[in-house]
Amino acid sequence: MSTEKETWPTVLVVDDAPANLSLLAGLLNKAHRVKLAPTGAKALDLARRSLPDLILLDVMMPEMDGYEVCRQLKQDPLTRHIPVLFLTAMSQPEDEARGFEVGAADFIQKPISPAIVQARVRTHLQIKAYQDQLNQHNQQLRAELEQRMGQVDQLREATLHVMVSFAEFRDEETG
Image (tube, rainbow, N blue to C red; front, side):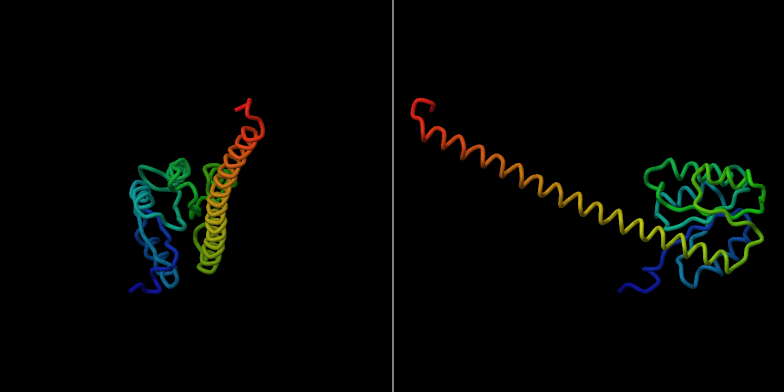
């Protein structure tokens, strides 16, 4: 039996500070399934194993920074479509521009405002849900188009066969 929580969107939160992970998990777990990753490598592994609906990603982390994590996510066809929201204390316009260059959907500055984080998460999840619906509809339309193209091919073959039969029937020497 499935529970209501199984239908909730999944948000992957990536931050090297345990306090930030706890804060965001507490903020989001009332309406989302929240997964936590303390490193970029762990985030990439989790994202590829179980696709989240959205990723909240810190920029400044040891070993692999958030820009590199986002770049790798956007290069992978499996994770390319997942919206990434950067959460960072970096406040320079060039930092934000770099985030968008590597594929981020949004940029939220720390210290965070819970209402702003919740609103932006909700907005980006709605956008992703609409995109997913469009992609599913496009797949259905492609399948229907392929089926109808097959029917047209069959009809064309049958028409050609009938035309050849008529030509042979009307002229005994042509046959």
